[in-house]
Image (cartoon, rainbow, N blue to C red; front, side):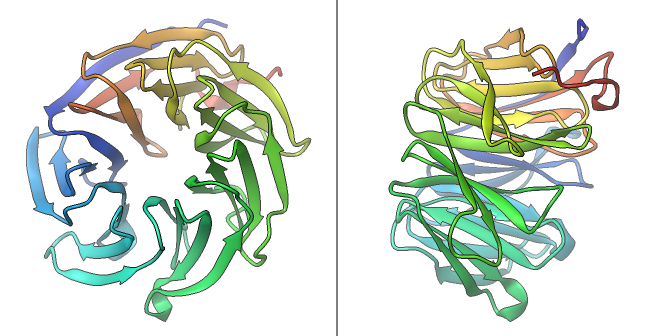
Length: 312
């Protein structure tokens, strides 16, 4: 089934090295955090900067909108999580969250919860209705924890990716992992949940230059996506179109057919290494963060997720 995909660049902005990108659910904003410690909000419709400010002298590796509170949450190498009101830019809260660099944060879709993970090998759950107290600690990885992601179909569970080479699946109520997905030959940098029909899958990207598709129910790898020439730094499954997107330190964006797992497109915008992907449910726009800036592309295709059946 050919996808007949059209890809159109909507926004491009040069900057220092981008470590994370996030889209606002209702405003035409993209949140960009930089290795330099600066945070920017760009308006991709008007092509202008809405806000920019220095968070810290350390790299801000993860920044997310918490739109229902009008907040931005940031996590940095100085071990601090900081929360700002994005209307007033007032700092709501600042606290030391880990004992080493913080790699990633994930916002629970409905509950007042934030997950964070760190080079200290630990994952923590924070409750902002309890003044950001840590309500659970999750231990089990033997190396840096690079990313955490809530399961959108079962928000009591989440996944973590680690440089120990594994992905672990956890339940919010338990400090130990439910199970481990082991198959990459090097560290795992990134993960994303998706589902086809009612069946849950997980996508992962690794320093072994591959991405893998995992069947969560059978706990098995159903496909390995090969083609990148360097570490895979971020992965996502498009919210609307049946495509898998992987990016790498090789500077390339690979777009795969999520039903045949065939490589459909390869994009390179000449901005050196790609570090981050940001996309939004209900949107056809995908943002990419590079060594030298940010790109937002609009993707349209002839097929949606409703029309596909995953043939693994």
